[in-house]
Image 1 (cartoon, rainbow, N blue to C red):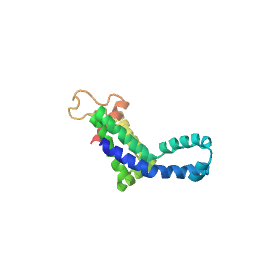
Image 2: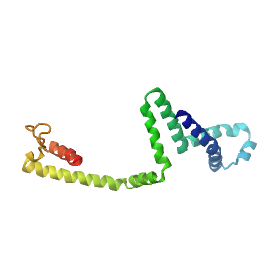
Image 3: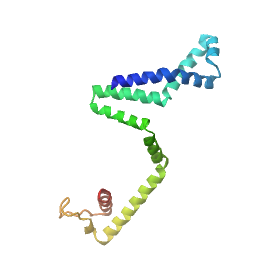
Image 4: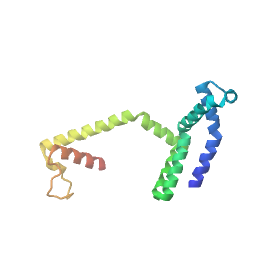
Amino acid sequence: QLLACIVVFLIYAIQKGPLRLQRDFKEATGYDLEELCALPLEKWRLSYVLLLVYYTMSDTQLLLGASLILSSVLGLTLSPLWFSTHLLDVVNKSADLQNVFMAVTLNGRSIAMTALFGAIIIYLFAVVGYATDGSIFMLGNFPDPDVPMCTNLLSCFLNALNEGLRS
């Protein structure tokens, strides 16, 4: 796994790195590569190195490759569970999963508001249950038939939320 990650990382870095660096450097400075080489070395060396680091760190595919290499090393040295992070690369490769991810993240506010609305409905159920008869929150013999699950409003709400979402 480590060898495969290193090979993919190097192929991407060699193939896309110089092209991206040349394009972004020209956008930032206005100099083409030939014009840059014609300038005195002291004038552009530091800015070139700083921009090289910046553009390398801002390339998400390169950072993904580096993180996969890191997780491979951690999988070999610490725990094999680190190899499970490689499964996240499936999202990167699958257009369908990318669409699902975008649907969830772009509509995140709507999803959060729906969850909040559900919690409010469950809270209202807990308030009514606590105000009328707290024994409706007894669940057979769980955890103990003699111990009520609704001793105060907070416990009623948490039990209704917990058991309501589980069933």
